[in-house]
Amino acid sequence: MPTLSVGDLTTLVAQALTKAGASTAMAVATARALVAAESAGQGGHGLSRVAMYADHLHSGRARGDAEPCVVQEKPAACLIDARGGLAYLAMEMAVREALQRVRANGVAFCSITNSHHCGAMDYHLTPLAEAGLVAIGFTNSPAAINAWGGTRPLFGTNPIAAAFPRQANSPLVIDLSLTEVARGKIMLASKEGKAIPAGWAFDATGAPTTDAKAALTGSMAAIGGVKGVMLALMVELICVALSGARFGFENDSFFEPGKPASIGHAILGIDPGSLGGAEVYYERIETLLAAMLADDGVRLPGERRRGLIASAQANGIAVPEEMLRQLRELAGSTT
Image (cartoon, rainbow, N blue to C red; front, top):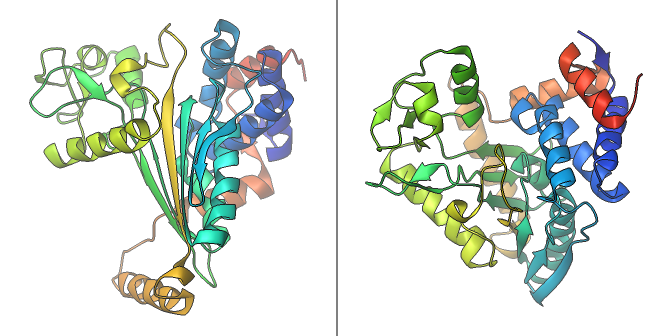
C-alpha cells in the first residue's frame, strides 16, 4: 500500500478540490481537515469524503466560491453564513471569532448556517482548547434518526464534541455521534450482502432490522434509546433554530443526488478564568483524570487518536491503491 507524507497528501487533496471548483482557500482548509481526520484514524471523515465533496462542487450542491461572513453579532455571540460552501472556512472563522469574543467577554457562542458536512468536530475544537478554553461543538446533519415512537427519520446523527485544556498535557477531547454505529458500516454490510447486528437500525416501518439493505431505506438507532433521541432533538434545535439552517429532514442525504445543503453548526467557548478561575479549573480536571487513571484498564478519550497522529506525522499515511488512483484522477495528477 503506498504511503504519502501528510504534506504531500494534503497538497493532492487540495488539488482535487480546486479542480472540482473550490477556491484555493476553501480547498486548502478542507484538505487540512480531511487529512487530519485520516491521520487520526477517522477515515469516515477523511479521504473517503474527497470524491463526495468534489461531486457536490461539480453539481452545485456546494459553492466553491463561497466566502463565509458574520451576518449577525453581539459582543459574546455571532452568526456566520457559510453561503453554501464547504464547511471548513466557516468553521475556521468560527474558531477565530470564538477566541476573540471569549478574550473580551469570558464566553462566546458562534452559530453557523447554510453550511455543509463539517467532518470531525474535535478537529475544530482542539485549537480552542490549546488556547486554554473549554470548547463544546455541535452539528446537525441529514435525517437519520426517528423521533421516539415514529418511523420517519427526522434528526441527523448530530455529533456532540467537547475539548478541555490541560496544563501539562494535550487537551482532553471527546467526540461522538448520536447513533449506535456509523452509517458507513451499514453501507459496507449492504454491499457485501451481510447482516448487521441487532440494535443498529430500523426498517422503513420502524421495526428493528438486521437486514442492511432494509436499514438503508429506514433509519439509524440512537445511542441509549429514547435518551439518545432526545439528545439528537436538542442538537437539531441548538444548530438550526438558533441559526436558521435546515433541519435534518429538510436536507437531502449527502450520499444521493439532492439539493444544496443548509446544515447548522455551533461552537461554545468558555474561559475557565471567568468562572472558578484557571487554577481551580486545572486542579479539578486533573483530580478527576487521576482518579480515572487509578483504575486499571481506563484509557482517556483521544489517546489512541494522538498516537495515530504522531505516527502519521513521522511515517506518513498509507493510502489504498484504488483510493490513491481516484485522488490522482480527481486532481488531474499522474504522480
